[in-house]
Length: 193
Image (cartoon, rainbow, N blue to C red):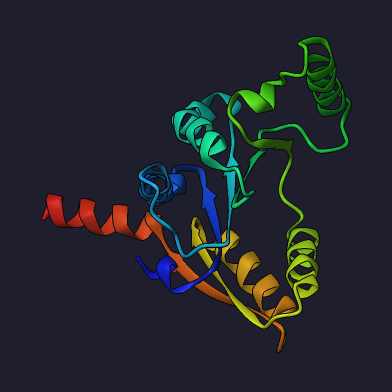
């Protein structure tokens, strides 16, 4: 519930790390549906997933968010990090096919079916945090952004670095981590012992 301490939050999930965030997103969604105010002015969700098919797990929640997201509070971004590299021909043709589907299906795209921006490859965190920082600085206020991450150590280290690099007097990124893998290991050890 620490996310309630922030007006601007970024949730970052690696694979199954999306599970705890789905509960948070559902809770915020139901508050909005009941007409209750939520403290958050912006909620940005990044999910790094190896396989596109597994994104169905959250599609219902993301569709519901799109319906209540009239003020643009919520932004969802899914990164598919499977074997293809960003600039190889398979990825290029896949991206081209998705763009064709967007144009040929009367405005509906594959990515809009789950109400998220879908990207192939890994996120460019420097670019994403730079854009977020510039957007918040335009508002000419000092703000602290709660960054919540549930993922592996490599992802946590990357996010720690960008939080440090882009924090300033105007915009500070406050990192909160959850090592989902450690919870599983501890739970398994407890059950086995």
